[in-house]
Image 1 (tube, helix red, strand yellow):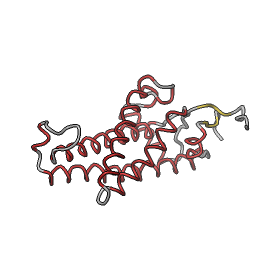
Image 2: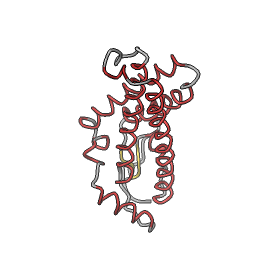
Image 3: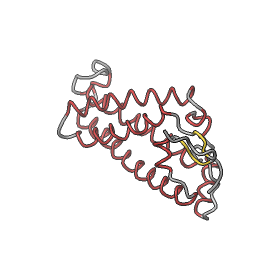
Length: 190
């Protein structure tokens, strides 16, 4: 087993890395199975719901760089970071930069909307954990439109997230995708 370089720092703990890649696989599964394989779609949606619950809890009690308090910034901080990014002189962060932190929150919120609207869609058909609630009165067509809105919104955010990872990797000369597999980044700028 190879020892990490001494100029590396542990950033992403194993639970965050497992969460991230499991979410990637489950979202792909859910998105692609939505129109054809209802059972697979529903169960992958439930699995995503479980992952979301974990991430929300881990955002408060997890390791340093997993905590929301480490990367949630003010709108002014996010704006200043994006401005510096456009000028090519954005500060490097060991954890999430302000734009990345905002993206994580946006992804979590959009994903919450996706899973909740999916459960509301099931409820409108008299199924799932929310059946028998006021959500059962929502017309199925409307519930389906809302669910698709959130799922497609996720695609937009995912594209922006991947773009941000690429830009940040190039700007700071570090491989953020590798860091999400290994959990490690360089301490100092490259």
